[in-house]
Image (tube, rainbow, N blue to C red; front, side, top):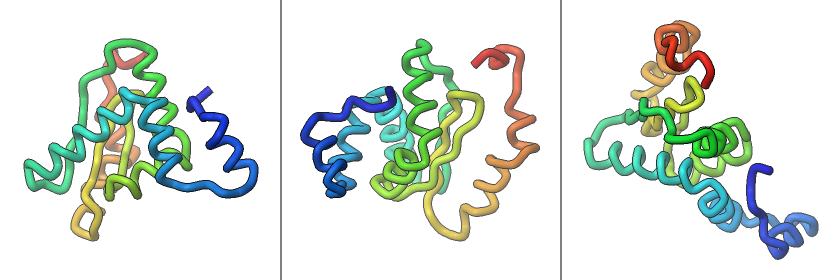
Length: 130
């Protein structure tokens, strides 16, 4: 299961009354490692004043790796996180999360990061089984 959905939130979803803020809070509490990773990268982006920040340290366990996979593999979760934080998210090798400031000036860097070439250059034997 990807998220720990409260009965109240599930009931709202069944009625069609989905509030994105409540959904984002559900993601925050269900996937704390992924939330903290993305939050810290967004903070780094703002502090450094750059248009890009990334993490290249593998998660400490498979549980945390699973949180990143669930957060970034779900279109709904990824989209909600991007809107909440006001960034574009990118993902490589089961752990390399990157945040990009929105805007046309970051499109080329995002395209390089998410390209086939970028993926190939980010490979290593240690990451074979991630």
